[in-house]
Each structure stands twice: as C-alpha cells, then as structure tokens.
Image: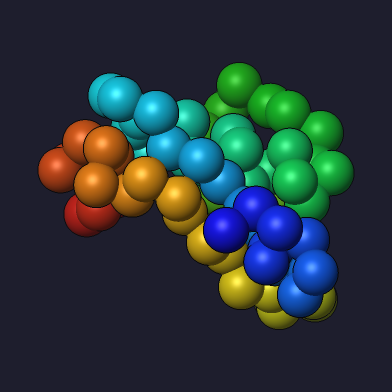
Length: 73
C-alpha cells in the first residue's frame, strides 16, 4: 500500500495498536507539513484548511487497529 500511495500521491498512514484520533491527526498534519501545535482544535482546522486547498486521498493501512472511538471523532 505504501508503494501505491507514493506512486499516486496519496497520504499513507500506518495505524498501530491503540492509535487514537489524535495520533491519526498528528500523522496527517506531519504528511501535510503542518507545524505541530498542542491545541487539538487548531490542528484540526489547519489540516482541514490544507485539505481544502489541496485535496488528497488519505490511505490508512491497518485501519482495523484504530480505537473504535477514533472512527467517530
């Protein structure tokens, strides 16, 4: 999946056991080259704004490892 993501300019994230929504958000922000912030809501806004300017598909490998609450966040 990583190879496919690189070839097709997708954001590739590999989930690990107990990954939570904050972890996924941090990974996405890092891939978008967004400066980290401790304010979760600010980071969500920055990621959303970046994706509005440059829409990109996000592929999450091993998504079944995400915490159930992460899917709703």
